[in-house]
Image (cartoon, rainbow, N blue to C red; front, side, top):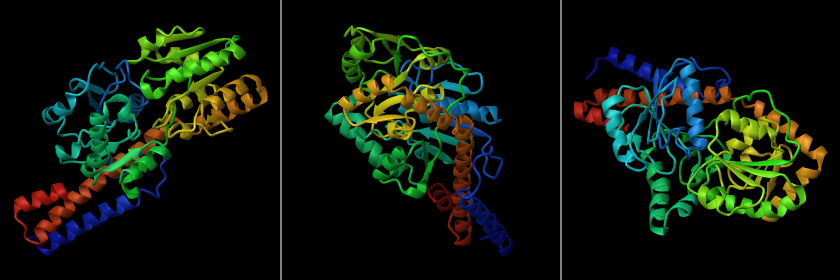
Amino acid sequence: MWDNQADGTTGQVLFQLTEAVENFESADGEQPFEGPGRPRSILFVAWRDLANPVAGGSELLIHQLASGLAHRGYEVSLLCGGPVEPKSLYRVVDSGGEYSQYLKVPFHYLRSFRAVDLVVEVCNGMPFCAPLWRRGPVLCLVNHVHTDQWSSRFGPMLASVGRTIESDLMPRVHRKSLIVTVSDSSQSSLLGIGVPQEQIRLIPQGVAEPPPLVEKSQLPRFVAVGRLVGYKRVDLLLEMWESVKQHTGGTLTIIGDGPEKERLERRNVEGVEFTGFVSEAEKHRLMSEARLLVHPASWEGWGLVITEAAVRGTPSVGFDVPGVRDAIVDTETGLLAGDPESFKAHWLRLCHDEELYQRLRAAGIKRSLSAPLKATVNAFERVAAEAVLRSHARSLGARYRAKRYGWSSNEGATASVNG
């Protein structure tokens, strides 16, 4: 056993760590973080790289966080399934195929990344279960919970397995991890699958300030942006467009790629153009020229493209569903619809009610700029440091208890991992 002086020193350090963790909630999160627990190296473990043709909002968020942290002096890496491409600010490593990566990630970690200060597991439905193969600090990032999305991608049996893994296994494996998310809707979904409130941290979904705006197209242009997958409901958008275009004319531009693209193109709907994947500069131009962003998705973690459009002076119409209702403040920055008929009515209204349109534009720009991307990075820094502090406090507390009560070294090691 330790002598009294050693016991007192360890107890004091443990108390200071615990006190620092408890003080996180009251501290100002608007400035870059330089306090205790700041990790020097961070590994993101995610499903996809931004270079993947079907990358979406989650991949963009990870890229923005990784780049922002690297700018601030962190050593940042991303381990994810291919395809990947090199980044100038952080290291990207291909961990395997779309599904094989879940088996390979632990081995990549043990071979190349076991010395990192923090692992950030990005849970896109299927968890990587980092706490099972990582002893050190782990932070779980959940953009949104996929409860209903499983059925849109898989058959009944696999969908049931997926839902069980996400709603039962993930919360159990991460019962001692902080879980960070980006919207009130996603926070509610996490509570719904049993994640305790005190375990969840909410960070703002900021947006990068765009280049100078370009003029709106003389002929009305409407844009939809996102991965072309089932839950984005582009089929429904095309059906609504066939009715709306009779009153508005113009074009509907659908930006993005995905498994549904060829089938949707074969519908040959008049006035619709599919761009496929475009650069950020081209996306900016098309969003700026557009009169409206139309977003028919059935759910989101946070409709990031809605915020991106708003900061470019383009209001949105969307359905009143999780994630979208977080990004659109109804009648203030855009309009929310309860069904396809009201969606079409909102669409037409914002083509003819110029006073309302200009009011939504101004409010959307103001709200978007009130949550800049640096605020997202600032908040994430604080949560990352808190995750490190909590892990160290648990580990030190386990070792302290082991020495104080005379546990064997093996028992103490077990307590350190599980404590």
